[in-house]
Length: 132
Image (cartoon, rainbow, N blue to C red):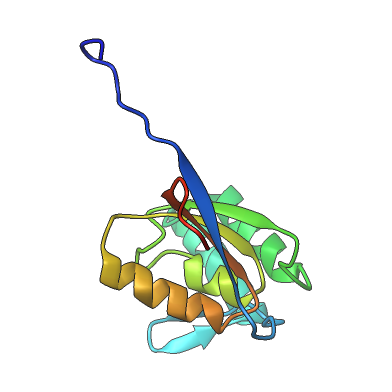
């Protein structure tokens, strides 16, 4: 190998297809309650005004909430195992999620088990030749 080069190994993709029904509403837990619809829109605007989030981020979330389904939409998540990340809500809404996360077998097992109960599809990188 050349000094400074990276030894790249081929990988494949393992797809976990959920068997659940897609949620029709997007909700966000916040401060002991669950925000959706008008209450979520109001809070997003409030966060944007305060500078807690960028205004275009608030608008993007509101646009996503207006969708009737996330089926047919694919998201790529780096740090997919994050507790505060959007992996679980996206899968519950029926999205396909290409997930990249740390190598923690127990955490992956939990995510796979969860994905199987949702309407979404979880795509995982696996070593080349690993059967799904």
